[in-house]
Length: 132
Image 1 (cartoon, rainbow, N blue to C red):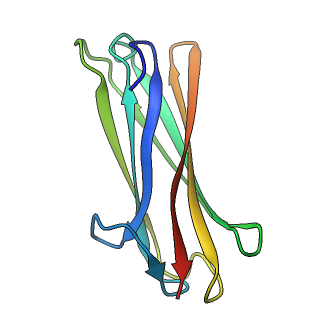
Image 2 (spheres, rainbow, N blue to C red):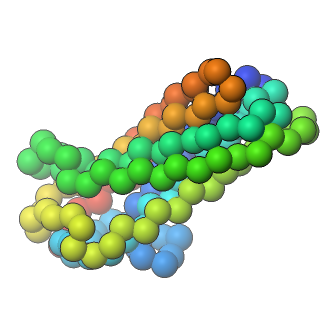
């Protein structure tokens, strides 16, 4: 975590559906989940806010976007000296994405966090995995 006025996305991981285990290899079109976590600095957490997490799976083999999903939410302001971790789970249904066996996929995440009149942004590269 950065400073008290920072918002940071710490991680984004594509995992086997219903588990916390990162995907190494996945059959084409199979369901999976994306787990992400971001933190809100102690001075920002006092404001009511909205967030958008943009999650993209890029096919590095074909150099194209394979999947794009968005998660949005709101957070009520709270007081405290510690940063607040915010977990995000997005289920990706079967047959909503396509890739060929052997394709190299990579997860990317962007966070847009709006507190009052200020919008913070952060990004992180997630895990890479292969299509079986």
